[in-house]
Length: 637
Image 1 (cartoon, rainbow, N blue to C red):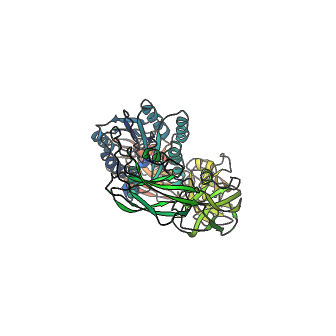
Image 2 (cartoon, rainbow, N blue to C red; image 1 turned 180 degrees about the vertical axis):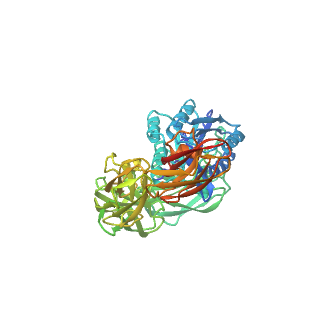
Image 3 (cartoon, rainbow, N blue to C red; image 1 turned 90 degrees about the vertical axis):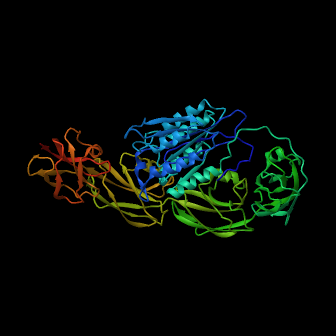
């Protein structure tokens, strides 16, 4: 649920992490404080991928540079990057541009020159960032992370942030996930949550721009602090309501009128009636929500009744800088009422279902329905918010239907409806039970060669969540936990809401024992079924009509493989001094190559390299971290 902050009450330090996504959080300055924003940018190899035929890194550069140009000149900004120098090095983290106010051109030029190369050491980047900012604890510090994936270096960045917070480090971490799958998103959301920040999701260029716009809108203006002006006495204004009793969460229109044009920061807020009148500063400390008048002298503003029944006032103030209260009007809030019904009350783990709702009056768009374990005491919206497994907003509708998926763990649960997400109340509930479902998985055979196609048939007791999935998992990984299977899967596919069907996979490139495991959801679910198989090394042979060639001469290569490879198996010309075995290393050094196109045998035409020397033809079972399975040498004279 969102968290609402008072306009002037709290100043928070913010950490921003840049992975493939960038986020900056700027907060109000104390009298001598600086504002520091450290960007951490993901330049790992996955940033070479394309969205709508545009390289992701190029998209990121454009949006980030545009954002940097818009930053206030008073802000210190720095840049840290990872994965930009070495292809496979978990220590490839560099503090490229130190924090400074006068470095915008350097920042932009540095970002423009980056090339995505290597790994994703998010935890190491965060560790370095916090240590850089640790000496600036009197300042407002921000770290922004933009990333297109999760940690790839055997570390836990979320636990690291939690440790820093427990040590009393003063920062806020925000994360922008750029084109991130649901499985990696969980870790990035955890980093933002642990650092008291927000997670922003962007799937394409427009979404990436919107994410930065949302961040910018939420940021206070950075400005050099000035002494508070003495309050100026203004004439009183008037406030009026169409009625004076409202249901919790109900929409309220308050009409205002002022005898003169107040500052743009004149404001109206909802204050508990037992707070003493008169002081704008005291009202600011206790307002539940507020809106500015924006120099308007008359008009209507929309609010929503607080979630807790009681007596409240609308109070109007001539400014938000040591101002005075100039008008007020009181109103009463009573408990809301609503009804809930379910399409069925007994469900299987991961099963989709609908809940119908009806409220007494149209509530706030932030009224919500959530799944709560039945042993959680009823009544408090805030307590339900702390324990909800899933939730959805009503969206300003007095009645309708919402779709959910049953929790992944068997047990007793409630659907509970709340009048708002801002310290509201639970106003309706209905119980249901969840039991463990049964499912089956079968294979077309139990032994496969590396790179061979595997067909997996599945059947489930009900239509599970569209995010139920089957993955290839090493057999030595303990069974049962979907989250653990998610950590170790080599490949996976979603069931797409189908209760039965067939999915095709490609056998892993490393021989060994594996399972096809079916899981009821991708959000902390359960493993429901599995089938085991073994993978053995594929074999192949290659022949040449001769072994000596002149530069540019045509070469005919004949190949024969033990299996029709399902993936992009390929033959390439590699200098003989390059070590054998690794397809990835062969890929880095090939002079030319051709795919075998799924054929078990055939003849390929090449041209001899232009440079004399010793070379090999090497056959690889895949172009995605595969294996070299055959080679034959020749010379160019």
